[in-house]
Length: 215
Ligand code: C5P
Image (cartoon, protein in one colour):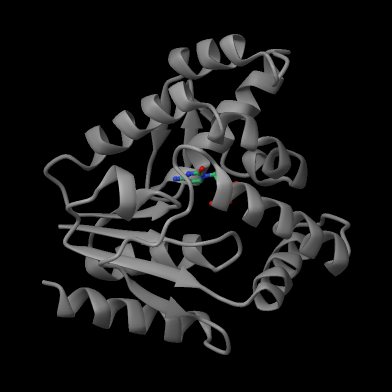
């Protein structure tokens, strides 16, 4: 069974999707981590991010391994390194690149083939797994999403203000909505869950119920 969870930045998708997968006994695929990993490795290799051919070569040569709670690229653990504010902003170079998207989509489909998966991103229910048995669109208001991300970043020791987080989030929302390929689209058959005012545990409980209704 494939469960897709799509939605805007900061809706709490990653942690909710991971916890849901654990409860269901399914594998978990964090597709945003793949786009982040490409940009991280490109920067490590001194590639200019606006050199789209060079970026594509980096993506084509990478061995990305996603386990349920770690991201390994060419055998190196980049789980934390890909989550900085700088990588978050730069990831658009990979996410806006049609050939990189095509390669990552292929990897996502290959990973999930014949297995039970919770997969999380922007285009999972609409493009990558249009036949998924259960599609969820997870969202929250702009303010709530920014507050959650702000607290996450502070907990990780980054110095940011809530206003900066709001502004960056707004830019990402625009980009996610208007990307020519792989834009954030709510699949017509997705169940929408707005998590404003819900605790993380309540979100996972509700997601679990939704999945049970689609079995
Ligand atoms: O979800 P996360 O914040 O880790 O995603 C990182 C970036 O990758 C986002 O800015 C998003 O636009 C992009 N992305 C994407 N398609 C996906 C997952 C993420 O374009 N399936």
